[in-house]
Length: 355
Image (cartoon, rainbow, N blue to C red; front, side, top):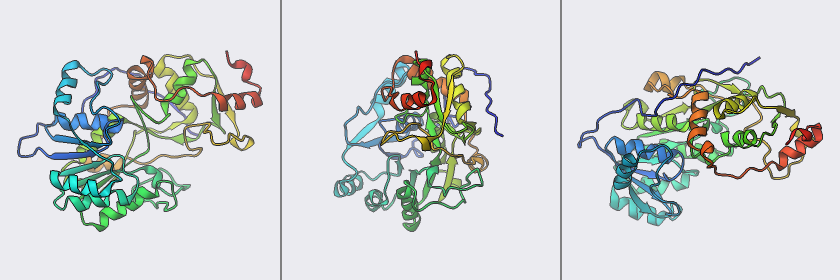
């Protein structure tokens, strides 16, 4: 039986462990596909701080630079003055080829690529590309009874992330220097997926937290700032050439343990947890719980041993960082929706627990 436990929270300021000084000769001309939300926001700041020339390729629907929660005015102004923008739609392949060919980037970070055909025009446009760093997903692994997932494990060609698998295959076939990062669940400030936010909404409202089945399903979360640091560490690293790395937190946690950790992070009372059998409900197209209802976690041993990557945030520290810099300030991506909760609570006779 798995037990969830937490370390005492200690406040600390985020910074990359790498903290290198980049000389003019080693500075790279870097293109980030995406970059105006979540992973790209933190990665672009690290790259700029290290002295690289960074351009974001976006459709221009969101501001290229917005001050982050907790970011000093000086740091923001410095970043804002240095970040560059190339406006376009990556699905406009001819524009991608012509615009990137004209710029001649050294390195591409592909944060939002989903399909291999989106990557081909980038490779065509940059024949002298030094490195292509791709954000894949641990969701590509074939479901198994033997965990954790290792980078050498079988993959599922029918997974909803099959486009990422096909992209990895394309990169191998094109003979470029590539690195693929496979995160598990990502959390942290400005998360656009309802991971920790899902729990925080219910905790703030003083509601019970409905969790499928036993709640002992084991999963894994990695902080976005640690992920950004990992992306930085593979840049120009020969040990990362044509390699895949799982990136996430070092510890695993049960669903019930995650609910309790979120409560601790936000300073809420111990949550009331309601377990339910998902097979007894029809939620239509709505998603009643933000995680896969299964054990799902991956080994990060390779990233640690090969690249020396050690996460700076344990789970409780990371959730506290996310709460203090985002939800705790009254900001979130999706409004609370308790409609599926109410269906579960009504059937279990626990609706009366809702204030």
